[in-house]
Picture 1: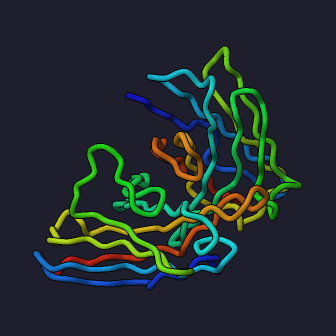
Picture 2 (picture 1 turned 120 degrees about the vertical axis):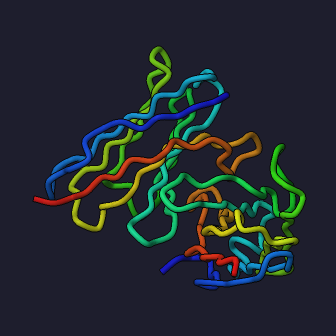
Length: 118
Length: 111
């Protein structure tokens, strides 16, 4: 059974960098695409970006200038960095695996709430 | 404002059928057969219910079905059960740059 677990600070100050890591268990991170998705309180889902185990990435155009997604295949982990955060970046952040065929997510982490506040 | 339009809320009685719509454009829903639907219970992660417009992942009840006509995709839940009460999100592929767009979600209440 594929399991994903997000980890990282739950509180980030405005203008600082949000950093999260997703640890994958039950499957190798190699050969698949992995994604970050967020959900602001009371709002819908928002795709942030994805990374292939080879390091190939694709980011949401509106967030592209602030995002870095990286992968560490030796640790079976991938990570998100979002710079210059504001209160608008307060959300539950999910990591998820993109299913074969693309454009869908078949396994999700439980999500982690990140609050941007001073 | 979400790129795909869903009704904010819907309700139905146990045993009834309900259809949730998801309206986009020819650049997303209408242009590709890559619409997916997710069920999300409060405080939980989304769960994939439908992909590629009408395919069901293994383990998802056949009470859930998907379809598409033009720029509008639909999720139909037949034989409503109390456990179906949740938020439902639609998602569509929108090209290699944008990648995907989501709807705002529909809160389904089972009366």
